[in-house]
Image (cartoon, rainbow, N blue to C red):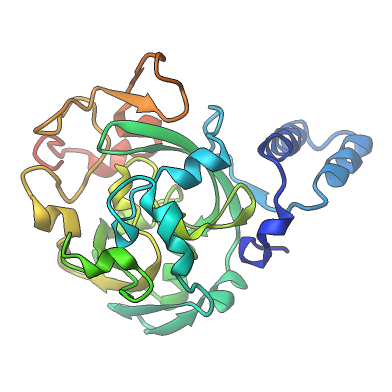
Length: 313
């Protein structure tokens, strides 16, 4: 099966063709794949597209364009302005790439990305993306469920948390030459959050390899949490029995909690989280009402049963 990291930018299929193909394939799955002629048409349209599985977790909202997704980014390793990552991330070397997995696992070690991709199932996931800065996008990721990677390493029963670490390479990541944060960037999830089927490691975008500015070649995506939880360019994963201190919580624990679930009922100390601005919607478009858990409440609310989400923010 073709995989995102096998693709080159010359293999790009326009967003319209990608989405039309995807909608056709989804319709065929829902209708029991009736009609060999339609399948042939889908195959002809998909000549430059890899064959991904369709997840069933997708939003029906229209995705943002490739340009919008790749030119408006927070990735402080390449600069603090939204356009800096697109301008500066070309310096990052992403091949070869490996992820060290250690801590409370049965098979600790360095896992080569190519070997990982040969053992996992790549899905298409069209997810909402909500930033704590109160802007949002809809993004068509390609990736695999994080639990598949953790299963390769063998999580020990005593593990309760997962810690993630971004690459530290200041000669290629220009922003790391400034003390904006304490490098390298670190994030964390509770183990049940990490093992949830919505939680993926993204390897692609719009059916092609993940651009450097979006966290190539491997980034975390947790769609019901604010975007800063989706750590980019991951090189280390540690299984722990204590809660790790993530970067933004360490910087300002009054404004950024460990859980960081999208919750319109709890304002950031400096601005409301009740609504959001959809990137690409135009200067005069109205703001959207923010959905609890970013619209994934039905799937994930049970993870936080009995918790006060105004305290565990």
